[in-house]
Amino acid sequence: MEKRIFTEETFGKTDTTELVGEGTVFDRCTFRGSIFTQSQLSGTTLLDCLFTECDFSLASFAGTVTDGATFSGCRMSGASFGERTGGHRRFSASFTACILDNALFQNLPAVGTLFSRCRMKDTVFDHCALKNASFDRCDLSGATFSGNDLTNTDFLSSYGFTIDPETNRLNGAHFSLASLPGLLAKYRIKVEDVPLSFPPCD
Image: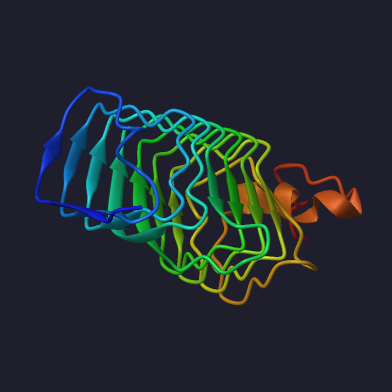
């Protein structure tokens, strides 16, 4: 397939699924309201691109080079990132106010990725390198993490997730006390917030 390179171009509210594919490079491009629903982005390169209020529902990012991409207010439910067998070439991105319900992140080198104010219900993180990543005020209700490197990852202001400390690397990860049940779920330990009172000393 002939290589197509788009540099510093702006794309609006059109169906852009025909543009993506093997050999396509978007370099510092801006997308506003563009439609990528069910797109197969394998072989596409995204370099320092901005995506605002775009629709990536059920899109597949397997086999892409994603370097410095910013996703803001995008609909990304059911989207998949990474590949079942690993080998994703590069992934550097940030997500702000995106809907990522039922998304799949698999075998992804996502060190330092930022998720801010995202809804990520029932999202799956499977064997990803998420060292130094940040989940800032994210709704992770029903989200699961398995076999990930979460070293120094920040979950302090997020909630609803379940993380097994035995199958994920958690050295230096940050959690709030409210997220403790999600860390102990497999042990069936009941954690309740009960005020403590002590009798006065004689």
